[in-house]
Length: 313
Image (cartoon, rainbow, N blue to C red):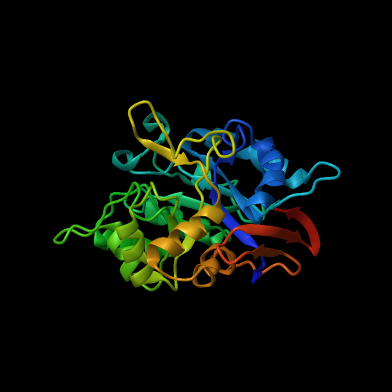
């Protein structure tokens, strides 16, 4: 059987939980989830705190700094992703609107890459948004534009201020209207932007996934955006009571397969979006000895971390 070796392993930079755990409720569950993520071929990940979890940032960074429990075998959390609460309330999506707020210097003071914050998603058009981007990037944090109603000018201003990514392309952002294009249009058009995409087949239609691939194949990053239902439910996608999509129920490995199918390309053409490119946009090199081995259809057959086999399918 022909196998495809993904050097560096899959790297999920937006995941909220899985297997019954939600990081914003219990940041210590990163180790329980990390132990299972190897089944998805993931060797490194950024656990995500959503807006309602912002109050737990100090607890979360302390847990990460303390390191894994004795005998831990699993994917490595390399820092936290803060998805909120510095959003445009009109693009809150599944986030609690009551906790969304402007960004202040006082709130940002404890945040840095050295303290364990690797990625922050915010809306550039909110009060203090551009100052927040410049401040956070000066602290070694990668900033991603998202949950935003930005105009083209506001989106480009965010990139000028130092933002490098866009969070879950098309979801919870101003879009592709032919006279009033918004953030999604800028993320697809501007070569400075690295847009992330949830390719679970439900967050984004196949047509729009294919369009994203044609316009930005060399810049896309795949993320799972998985929630606690992953591994615990057969539901195709998580939703709030009002029907709002609230996260994915499948892992990054399924995203690779789904995008390849939608874009009519080979699995080998897509894996960089889930491995080397996520690391690169965060300023991290590939990790020697991490490998995800796939069969010809993109199924994970083996995951290796630091040269050690940690999963065999």
